[in-house]
Image (tube, rainbow over all chains, first blue to last red; front, side):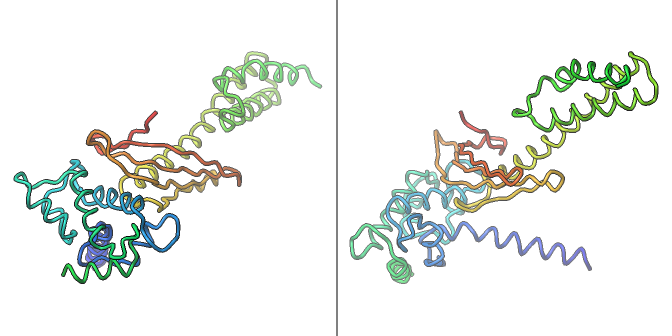
Length: 132
Length: 157
């Protein structure tokens, strides 16, 4: 019985870890408030382009399970609309970091409705709702 | 002071720097102090037991070597724990989240915190901050490590 509980514990821990990279995306299940808080280095409550860029690169790193330096479409579950569009356009079905960053900045511009170069929690939540 | 003790001290002064690999207190305090303590203890025990010059010299050398070795082993455990924390931090911690290590034997502790992630020529690299607390004093260091094909992280520079 103890062995079964240990296995169940390990399975829950793995599930939690596996879902962690999703936090780094503008995907449909993103907790915008937690994501902004995690990457808001200057503490202004919003993400500027530099903070966003760092967050996106890190998201790519954690999504890349095999650390091959690129992502396959199956590694882009719950990803942002632009990231999915970018990988679907590729014949080899893989997306490099640069392509991913470019796609994510299209999301940034689309989400930044007041065009101040900063993403607020509300802007991200509105963008996620509109993308569903 | 008995002649045997004087002889012991003289041998100790000659032998300890050699036995500890000339480790200075600044460079490797545990090895130096361990070597000195081991040598003194070995020499005094031999002298108290009525041993002659060669016996005292042998005990001093043996004590110094054992003491220095014990000092180095503890240092290595600190280093090994810090290296393991570094590997965990670089591989799986988000930037800004510290991964801690503590050596209960020495009381030394530290954290490794990834700061930034980037790619260089298709290889992942991460900048990190390392904090070590020794004797209540905190030391900070910054570094960059790049991921190797075998999954290890190699410190750059």
